[in-house]
Length: 117
Image 1: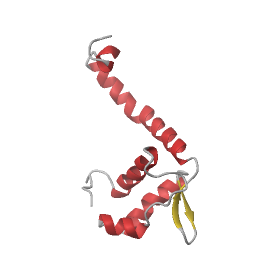
Image 2: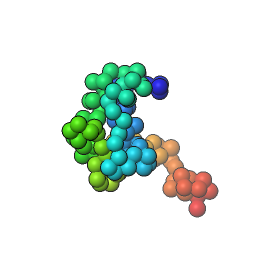
Image 3: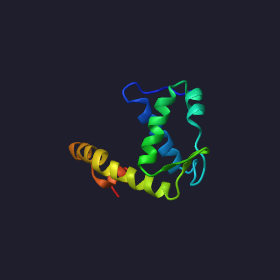
């Protein structure tokens, strides 16, 4: 069981965990993801919370429901996940990082090697 961040809804944290597993290859295309019941029992959370996270991933085209079989990672999921995460980074995270870099007067060399080269 993990420690949940109280500032972020659990279903979003769970979605992020599955997304990261797809990105790092620990969940591969065509592979079954753990059942809603199993995740709920392992993590001591409500099955509805797990279902909500999984449904988000279905809506994003990363998981697919197979009637009577469970949830599976869709073909092309890693490429879609990578594209989605890049867009989120460039739209939401990078502007704040760039602003911070500029406010500190850092140069590209400071970030890449620390010696300015």
